[in-house]
Length: 451
Image 1 (cartoon, rainbow, N blue to C red):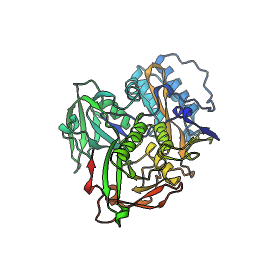
Image 2: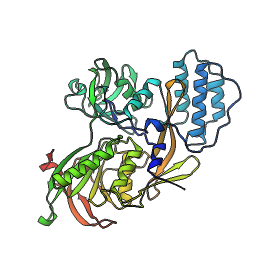
Image 3: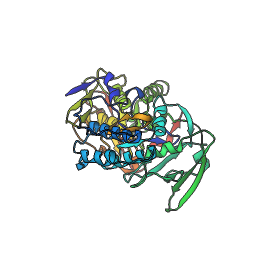
Image 4: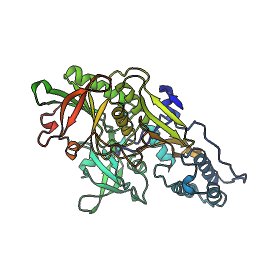
């Protein structure tokens, strides 16, 4: 078993997708660490020479997938025969045909998270990895994905081009610039995001399906969009007795980007010191992931020392453990976590770490269930592959892929923020536990005060 410390974290990253089509793409890893680097068995490479640049690109993609993909059976596909089909016998007239060949090769794996990125798509991702707050041309809409791979508008930024164009929460995005996205046939959400991004002042055509199933075409002008950071609010919550009254700081975390952990810690200090918050509610509803290292870093700050955060299991069955190294700076304040069916990937890593280490109760709905880890492998010519390289397990060794995390308190009213907070005993480490209860007529946000 390997034990990972902070200096190892950028070797791997999860890329389950919470997207801003303002367009924050999944922060898979820092750009300096996008190459996979752990030992994996080699796949024999045929000796036949590859003459054209197009065929060489396809051959490189075949070799990279063969060395890194988590499933050594390749979904039951004969990987040597795949080379014969796509490389040796591939007659690519141009690079676009070669790129389509790589996409078709990826589809054989039956894994929607393993996919090809064109040079433009890869460039879009790398530009956005550096930090949140990056300015770029987009339309100002947050997107999530449902279990059928449909891309759904989660929200639009106030005053954004998307809002002005009439895009609404719940709209399903079917096509961008005439290219089908999502679903069984269309591309992935990050491909949709790369289509939505572009030069400020240009227009993009978006086909959406709203409530009632009616398609409509919307033309949206791209503008400079500042990505939405973590936000905080404070609410006074009445308990059964005056002694149980408490002030709760609610932190809304829309995605895990490079700066998320620092933002969360800063806001915890702010609501506690300046606003008198006695407990923290982490709102991870709609958060479908982002930066795996960031989620691990935040868990370290919220947990005591010597606690397991998550395990990563590679294609050889080797388990790598991520642990806390010392006492977390915020390991004492009571915490609860609010989740829904869209909470996924890096957000599930944090949720499970807090839940299974006895640090926080989880409320809401069963989470999405993405327990796969991806890395990005650059190819010649500026393209890249996003490859599933491992699975992850919770501290109690649960594989949540396609299963999700069960909340401690399951109630639809919780998802609508119909909750009440009280103190109940103490958690495993002696700090007061924040217990979340869902009575019928006591909405948490009825006395909400934003700052």
